[in-house]
Image (tube, rainbow over all chains, first blue to last red; front, side, top):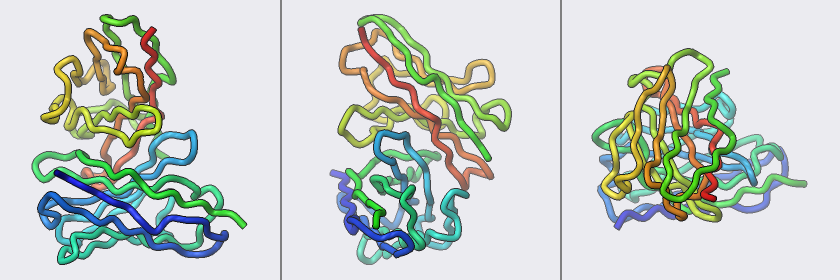
Length: 119
Length: 111
């Protein structure tokens, strides 16, 4: 079945960088656009970024534009999120989400990895 | 800044019907926003229910349906079950479906 497993979270000081990974299995990764979504503690969902199936296009939410880079390695069926200049308000659970091949939407979510930005 | 707004909370009786809505501060929500709906139970990852306004995933219970209603996207739960108690989020796409914006979320209580 479809599996999405995020890693790379942890405690990081303000201003530092972090790279998250999302290892996938159970589906043809190279066919699907992929997204990152985050959820701050006790708050709602926030869409962050999307990358096309082949990595040729990527788009970012204005809230973190300039500090995020989404990328993928289709040979490793893995999605990445590079986050720079982290701030305390970036503290959240970061989840990778599979985009649909036919139609526009999200269909499968990982459990997420917690990033805590604190000195 | 684009803001997508949902009712903060709704209460429904078991077996009843409730409709959640999703509005955009940029104007009427249309099929071009490809509205999606997600359910999140406490401590769990979100689960996709609806995509592109009214299309269901293979796992979506029949009692969930999506539509457009008065310039908003809507999710209707008919014959509500106790396990439907959860937070629900809509997702709208903008800028040629390049950018997504989640709604503020609705907490549904079954009482």
